[in-house]
Length: 136
Image 1 (tube, rainbow, N blue to C red):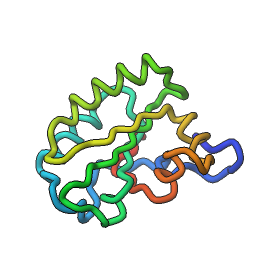
Image 2 (cartoon, helix red, strand yellow):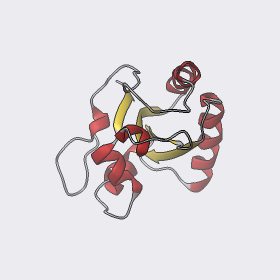
Image 3 (cartoon, one colour):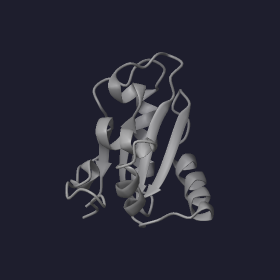
């Protein structure tokens, strides 16, 4: 179980759960396309969890809002080359969903560590994100 370096609290994405979407992601998202894309994405090798965060997770999205999606990978750390390789593969699997996508990838060890930093986006992912998938 990945925990932060300063806390023994499990990360919210540590509890396995089947793929599901939050109740309302706001205007501009093609829900059927998103569901199909997330289904494809969740079947890709190496994915530990997926978390929606930002305005769509908070219920504050407008038609011009993008979808902020964090993908936590099974690898502990992703170097720049590996992150780029996976980002391309995962973004292609997700496909077009009717709005822009801000896809953030982290290895599970880095995700836990960075979630303790007040300056890193992973803190927002941990505190306010909605886990939509977590593998066994």
